[in-house]
Image (tube, rainbow, N blue to C red; front, side, top):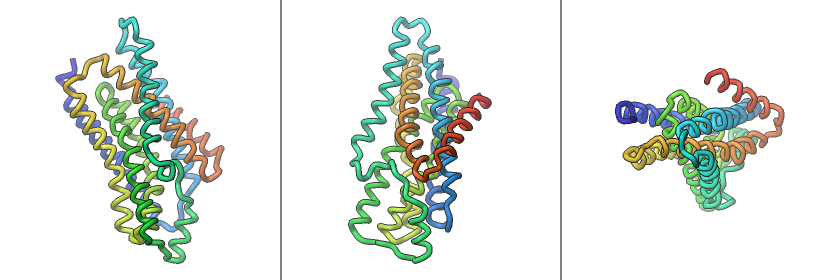
Length: 270
């Protein structure tokens, strides 16, 4: 059923995942080379990304999973189990990351403004170690997002493109979150930029693992489980990471406007 077109679709899914992952570098550039960061725009972007992810999860991925399992007496329970299984996997990844290194907070742009103004960097060993651990935590956090993009590409490139767009948008502030402590720890803009950009490559790595491991075993049932599981991952990321990060700067209503706009855009696009 899938053999005739799978390779091309998976390749496109991998490319989308790579492009989304590289958007971390855009965030790093914003943090390291621009003198002022527009927190309202970042808040709106994070809210929009959450809106896109939640809408796709409940309006596209879950219904598609149910349709693929049509005729299976346990279809409803399989879909529900896979959805919460995806949430559990995302939660376990969170729990495996030490609390101090968990990427739930984004550095205040005022910190960067002070660095640009004074040219002061910490550059000490303890800060450098914490910065590297933080970068590793972000990379681990990004891994399932690559799986999400490719899993969507197995069946529907439009959904895969929407997932990749949502991931790309929220990777920009994640790049800021990684680049700032790296700059503090190393005192080198170039090194901080390169390392922050590399953390985004965990996404195409996740996509590659998904392709290599799952490709020989793809069936409609496995695809349905993947879709529901990816929906769970994206909903968890939205509520655990994106929305709390969007609230970081106090623009509450702007984040909600972003959520609504993201959902509306996906409703019209799909």
